[in-house]
Each structure stands twice: as structure tokens, then as C-alpha cells.
Length: 287
Image 1 (cartoon, helix red, strand yellow):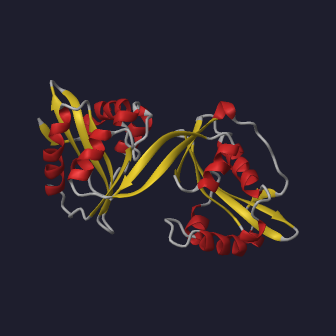
Image 2 (spheres, one colour; image 1 turned 90 degrees about the vertical axis):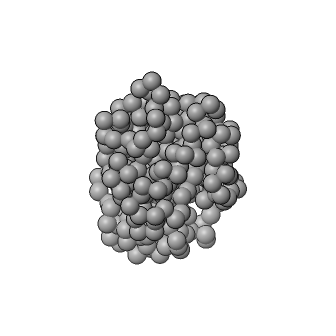
Image 3 (cartoon, rainbow, N blue to C red; image 1 turned 30 degrees about the horizontal axis):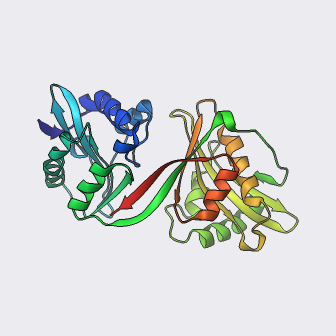
């Protein structure tokens, strides 16, 4: 039976999605691997649409065997697609009907679906090709374990202060001109859990890292890191990265930091690997 999911399905759905993402042949990038984290995301504001309009499931013998979700953005009618998730190749035959039903019941048309699929997930890639999506790039997922982190401190790296706000704004908006958080947005988000650290000396601000910690869900993210072009190749990026990791790993609930990097960004990948990040997945981005 194919039907829209409800809040009553979230417990079983989180378990199903986590089990799928535990193996690369069924892994989807927009969704994590931690069952409690997935459950928390589904129970909170998963999408701009109500949950009952955002997730479709296939059920056999009272067990979920396939699922597709839409983290929908009403502003531009785009969505990060959670899925398609399938139990096995047999249940994959349900996906076209599920996709059609999911899209047709939306109160607002879906114009821009974004898929993020493990390169080994042949079933999901084949389905995405069949619905007309095109490959737009390849990305690596990198992980850093708390147990492999050595806490370090660098006196040149301090939290952003009023004297360096303008320099931070100029560097961020130059380094990331079309990103999801401009400098003003970052400044408005700052608190004890969301922090900008800056590398400064007598020549001024040379680089920064912006990190966010979510202790409740055990999540830590390196949102942005940038070094002024004039001061590249001096080890500043690595020092900033390590300072951000020091901060995130002070939260006992955060045990793993995950990053997504475009496959062709060799400099960024080398930087993260120098801080003991490991490549754990390669994913294809399709839209």
C-alpha cells in the first residue's frame, strides 16, 4: 500500500531511513545515519509544508519498504529530496507511482527537486535519471571523529569582536558572494553556540571560521572558513579549522563532525584531511 506518511509513522520511518543509510548501496546524502537525529528532524519543521504533504511511504505487512520525502522551500518551489529509499531492488518498482502521487498531492507545485545520492546507490540514480534529472556535480562526505582530535589553542585566534566586524563582513561576502548566509545573517545568528573565530595579528584580520553547535541533537558544523587571498599558504586555514573543532568537541554530545566538499575542490579536501577528516562517501548531485 502506498500512502502519505503521518506523525504516527515517524518512529518506524526514522528506523527505516537510518537502516537504509547504513549501507552505501541505499545511502542518500540529504538524510543522516543517526536514527534519533532523523526522528528529531522529522518531528520538528522538516519542510515548509505540513509533514503529511512532505513524505510518502510504501507499506507491506505493516512495515515500511520504500519512502520519498521533500524538504520543501515555498519561496522558490525547490526541495531537497530525501530519497528515494528502498528496502531492495524489488520494492524499487514502486518508486515511479510514489513520485507521481507525492508530486500531485502537493498544494504548491514542485519546480526544482534536488537529489543527493551515493554513487553506489544504482537504484536511486536510475530512478532519478528516469524522472529527467541531470548530474550537476560530485561531492565527498568527510567525517572527523572526536576520539581522533587533539585539542590545540592558538593565541592569534579569538572570537569576533566589534573591531573586526567590518573586515569579517568584507572577507565573507567576497569569499562567498552567493551563499545561503551573508555576513549580516551570520552576525544576527551569533550566540554561545554559534561563533565566529578570527585569525588576527598586527596586520589585521586574515581569516575566519564560523561554526554552529547543536548539543541537543549532537551536531556540530563548520559552516564557513575563509582566508584572505593575500595570506594564503601560511597554515592559517588549518589553524582556524582546528580552533573550530576545539570549540565543537567541547560539547560532549558531539562525537562526529561531517562535511560536504565538491570533489574538484582539492585544496579544501587536503585542508580537511590535514586535520584528520576521512572521506566516507562520494555522492552525485542531480537536479
